[in-house]
Amino acid sequence: MVVDSAPFPAFELTTWHSWGSTSIVLLHIRRFIVGQWQNNALSTLAKVNYLPYGIDFPQGPTGRFCNGRTVVDVIAELLGFNSFVPPFATAEGEVILKGVNYASGGSGIRDEKWSKPGFKVTNMGCCGGQNACLRSSTPCQNRSEYAFWDQFHSTEAVNLIFGQRAYKSQTPSDAYPIDISTLAQL
Image 1 (cartoon, helix red, strand yellow):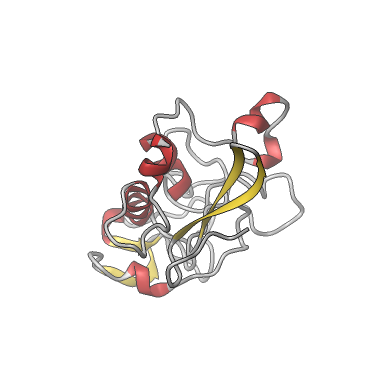
Image 2: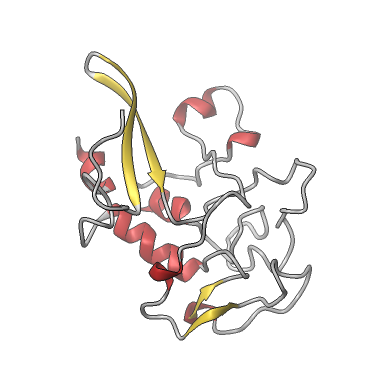
């Protein structure tokens, strides 16, 4: 069952299955590419487990399609998680019951409208290249001024803004019907 939604909210809650007072709730993150690690074991060209990807991430290149944290990483930190949400592709046993990231790089849709405010560079990626960052290429030094890391994926600076707004929304289009901080208190 899809919860009533505002016109194209960035974050939407969907009730997947209910048993009396217990429900499994999915958080659907729209307009973002949040893939991490999922592609590392796949036979695909859409892999980013090399520098300069992950240059600003504490664990270095892991397969996240940006320079640092994804929106999911930011939300996990704001919720007080002790570690980042693991990708489904590498999760095993009890870890799966605590939550996994099902996103896979190369499966998202870029929405340019959300990337314009507050960034000096919105028409090109920080690390250059036609599509993806080239292995061991030198990215721009002023990464916080760029909306896009490569041709398609947002920078950590964009992910930070949208992770914070999903956690504590400023407008109804940020998160609907409630933001994540409110959900966490239920």
